[in-house]
Length: 147
Image (cartoon, rainbow, N blue to C red; front, side, top):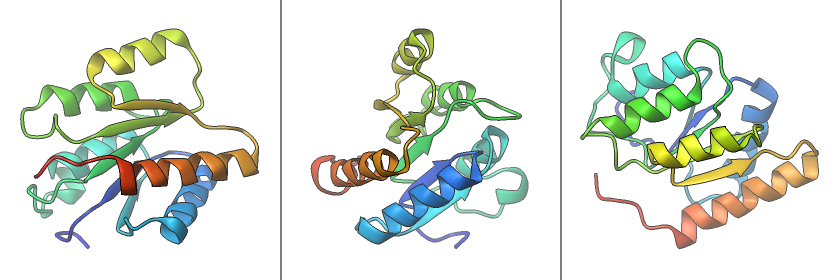
């Protein structure tokens, strides 16, 4: 997996939300290769091929990043800032998928270059619905930049 194509990078510290999202995406999505990282520090290591991911091929960028913003170590806003500030990673589509409905968070994420900002519903069925709609968007409607 280290040097194979990563279609979705899921950056989520809540293991229950991550498991639910991965199961839903793998079940319905044409995008099957999903990598889950548990915090912002690990996300940056993965994206920039440093630390524990130093052997990963930098050219194998994720097609899309699903990013939570409320995480330990390095928060999602700082991860987004780093991704969008780098010429080699700024075209990777980033969809913020978080529990925060705070206006400053939403504004900051869009100012930094987020492609979408979605609030995770608390209810199980609604969460599944959001992931299914996100999958439809990613699989059939959105065009990805060539890497």
